[in-house]
Structure formats: structure tokens, C-alpha cells
Image 1 (tube, rainbow, N blue to C red):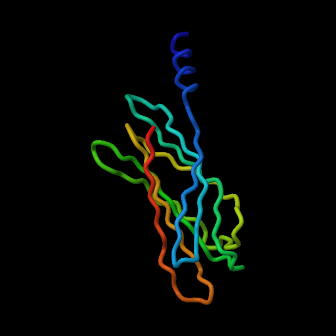
Image 2: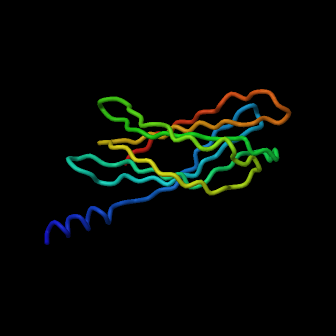
Image 3: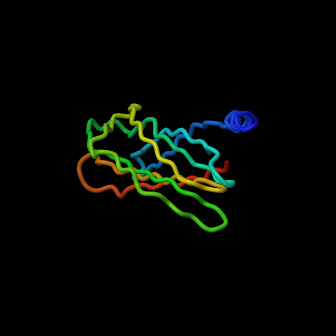
Length: 141
């Protein structure tokens, strides 16, 4: 019985937070990724850093659908920074300055902090090449 109460107490402290990570390039292109994240208790003073991508937006409205994003998560603690594998979206995302659902979740064990790195790739207006834009954010539990 005390184990169940302990688990209920631990679960009551879970806090799901929302964040929008964005990155702009070429003074005209902006990628945004809306995410939910939380630190879920695991074993031996470890936590799972759980991140769910909810939706994306590419601006400006170019009428094209060749953009994509990718993201990875990891841990940052006294032993250094370690990342998991990249999730890469299809290269057919809308560039219309509107939010679009795109659900995907990742998790990674940590003892202290979580880190999210997002890379946005655009199909520029008028052709040419725009280098990918990368944004990295650190989160404390």
C-alpha cells in the first residue's frame, strides 16, 4: 500500500510544459516547432526526458510544400551531453505560415537536464539554397 501511495505522490508532481522553438534565416524564413516536454521519474535518481512534437509552422507563405524539420533530444549533466537519434520529418511540409499538426514523441534518460536541438530546412522563394537553421535549448527538471 505504501508503494502505491509513493507512486501516486511522484506522479502528482509531473508537470507537462509547452515550448515553441524557432529559428530564422535569410531575414525572411522562420521555422517554428511546438513541443510538450516533461521529466518522468525512472529508477535510481534518473528521469526520462519525454518530448512530443505537436505542430510546426514555416513562414512566410510561399505556397510550397518542400520544407522539413528534424529534432533530437538528449541529456546534459555532470558527465557531459549525450543525444539520441534524429527524428526527420518528410520533405513535404507546408510553407504557408499556418500551424500544422505533426505528432511524434522521443524520450531520453537523464539525471539532471534535458536538451532539444531542432533543425529547420526551407525551400526558398525563387530557388537557390538556404542553409538549415539550428536552435538548441536546455531544460531543467
